[in-house]
Length: 360
Image 1 (cartoon, rainbow, N blue to C red):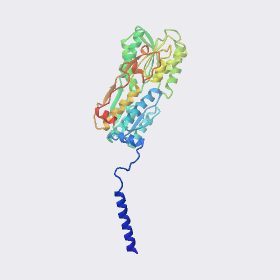
Image 2: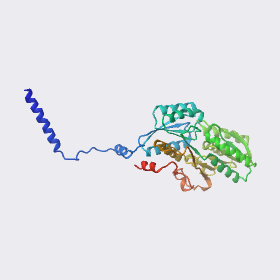
Image 3: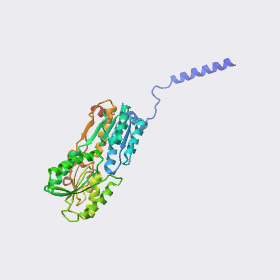
Image 4: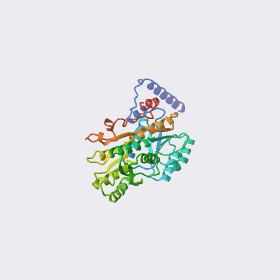
């Protein structure tokens, strides 16, 4: 009986082999999903990399557009971004940096912060072979690529415009705060400007970075306007950050002070809406496209992941935006390049290798 069973099993095995051999070649097709196609398209040495973005704080539309630039560029390379928002707390920022390292990030991007808070964590990341690219962070660690805007040039461009508009004679309010690397660089240019222009008189200075910077600035500016109520008491406001400018502009508009003009640094879609408003006191700004900043930072991170050795200090070139050059129709940062030469679409950080990988 056992022998008969063995013969039956053997016969069945032979039959199954014969049936398989008779099947037509290449006819078995696995349906390919959209996600499968996307995965296949992104199969290159940099695909699937985990990128950590460590923010000191996420405030206003500038930050939103910057983050969007990071996410867009990482996605184009087939990677994934995890955003850590430290809500203005440097101790939390250092903790977030440690978390990104411990979670095994393939690259770390840092947005603002100080070397006192971050150097130790960045050194740990570098020791572990994790590429780090910092933007306006003041980090001082060998092997880290540091991006900064042309802060002194932006300050010079806006301050020179202020002086030209008012014949070298003006009473100004400065809105600025210490503790941020880009602010400190802008302050250097400001001090030199006052030294070179004795007709420019600073009548008041204030500023603080909070979770409600624009609103807090508005309240402070309202108090300044009450302190200087007469035409000519204040000629212009120089704001070292667009969040400051927003608050100042709203206070000036609500007070009906058409005699005061605002000059600033940085640019976002919300800023453009305010600048283009009829009768707006906001007349000029200098900036780097925040979306481009994010894109460029990612490109340098991927250069490092790819074993390349880019320069460790990268200065992003700013663009001067004069409200008088804008059209009547609404403009966004996406369309600003149609009216302001040099805005957007920066090629910084690209290599031939990255372009090829991005196109796969």
